[in-house]
Image 1: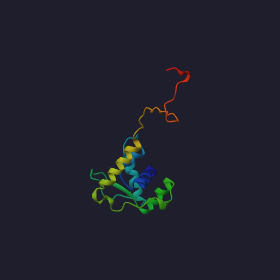
Image 2: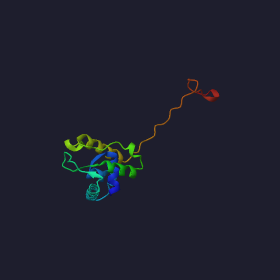
Image 3: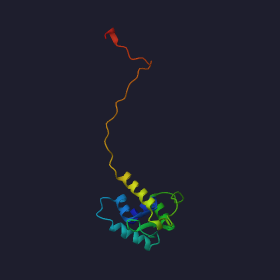
Image 4: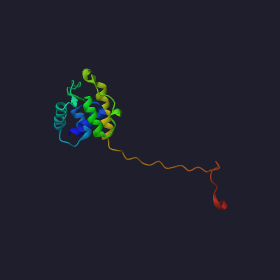
Length: 136
């Protein structure tokens, strides 16, 4: 679970345990394991919980050391990871929460089957094709 939390926060920067749960393991029973993993990351200096979202859920973000750990989990250079979300939680982070919900919706939406559009064939000369044998 720690790996899931690190990966999610490495991408989202700031999230609730419920958002991490729905993004990383939506079939899992509840978000308690993700809250416990986030608390464990706090104990090891990899994450912080600065404040709460407007819905009252605790917000989690990575420390600089946590960002390095997330880079390792995601297999990316730490320099490409962006910064930490310092101070973003003070206002309840409405924009970050909306972005997270969009990411969750896009990644968890099953593909919808579509019907193929038949391809229209045009004559190369620009005129309609003529019929063979002179029949109409």
